[in-house]
Image 1 (spheres, rainbow, N blue to C red):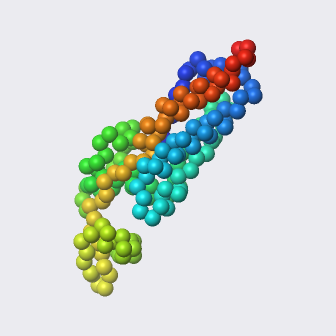
Image 2: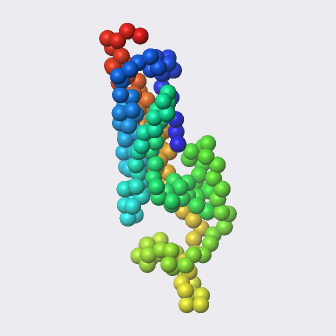
Image 3: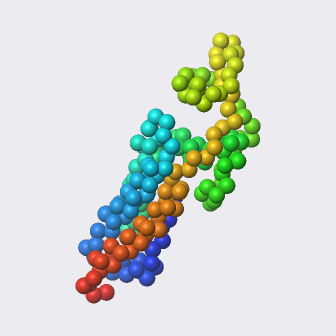
Length: 172
């Protein structure tokens, strides 16, 4: 998750203001980041893309916009897995430490559709009547972090401008 820091002087003035709907402004900003993530997410079946959501948390003096997915495998897509993920992690969310499996592994055919197994051209063996596929993981395909990095500065700028526009004519 990425924090977007605006003008500190402006933030301190917010404590004295009433009637400005900052929650809606933050919601709009989070939606811009969500939209950027939707455009970046790799699509296989569309399930991950359709699971990217936003929420706004109002903690009194702090209002936080959150962009998230509820899919358990999203982190595997974002950061990659296994040796392939480790090899492609450089520069992706530098503050996040990820532990990667250092060797490939076998998994049963029940974990993947036959179409996807064919598409990815996994090596396979049959053991005791069960087909197993071999993988060395997948490369990182970041979508959330780059979306926050790309859209975040614009969102902060827009939020600052919207608040300044609201403040015009008010005495502070």
